[in-house]
Amino acid sequence: MCYKGGFEVIINLQHPREMKNIMKNKGLFLTICCLLVGAFLAAGLYHFEGGTSPSSPSLPRLTGHRQGIQLSQEGSPVIFRDALSELDHQAPLGNATKISFSTPSHLKIINPSSHRALKRLFAQSNYSWKTLNQGVPPLVLESLPPDLDRISQLNKRKKMFFLSLLPMVLLVNGEIHREREDLLSLFNDYDQGGSLAKNRRQQVASLAREYRVKGDPLTDQAARQKLLRRVDIIPPSIVLAQAATESAYGTSRFAQDGNNLFGEWTFIVGTGLVPKKRPAGATYEVRRFDSLYDSVKSYMWNINIHRAYRPFREERAHRRAEDRPLNGIELARGLKRYSIRKEDYVQDIRSIIRQNDLSYLASVSLRNS
Image 1: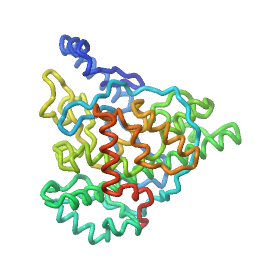
Image 2 (image 1 turned 90 degrees about the horizontal axis):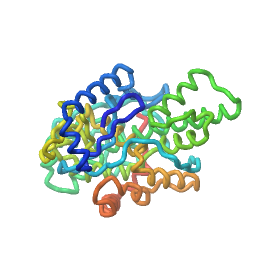
Image 3 (image 1 turned 30 degrees about the horizontal axis):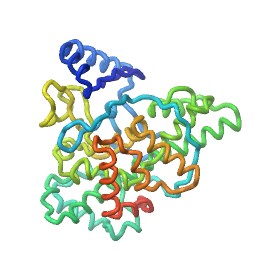
């Protein structure tokens, strides 16, 4: 999948005829992709800044274009036949989530050398499954401990994995929440006064570009509602459950060597990891991320813009309109197309949420100190 500005060249690797044509014209295909990537870089559109609030924390930002294609844990494609394209549906507006998303006063970016070192850090921070009601420390892991698989007790390994990712999930959700609140405020001010200052109009336009919404959300109600459906949080229970199943609780090769928790692809040769079971003739690689935070943020963006997850966003919007909580177990049904296993995959996600009591995380928040 290659991009030039807002246009897309889509390659469906699941279609035999397309694969045959691609291999026949491999040189031309690679040349075109390189030219498009070069144009993308030259246009200055290859970097997405994710928040707009002046109070947003200084975090490792997601660089490079965020791909919308996934791999299974074994490296075989998890089918994504659809392109990243715009949707033509509408959903009611809502603001039902009652969670505090205040920005933490400071962050700690760490790169643990072992699971024992990470365990000591958690203990020093009074951070455990039993102390979640006291708040989650704002920790950002550059990578997971390399010996995570050496924790013999599976339950303890799972808990360390969830605790490692939870702060970053809350940080990304906090950023998305601030973007949503900014949009609601901007839309309200525009509706009340009929105009906005140039910098505030640019703020709306920037978010519309980032979330792949065409049209002017200030004057186009369909574009406005589409943007608000996309700029919204994802329940931590879903994020952690999917990260667990896609990365084998952080022990997979892609998670360990590429900080890739959700198996996203890249077609820029040499920038990712080559799957061991990649089909002959295929050129995709599994993306490397600078940090786990980048992987989490890319995944959330993917869920919020890819048309494969339209059912998820619709259900989320309906729940907001009815002032109901964003229940991860219920919302998981909208992720059926995340895997070729479809309904069985959804049931696996729900089982992980139930067995590990991840629904409880909907009530936790970051500490401010």
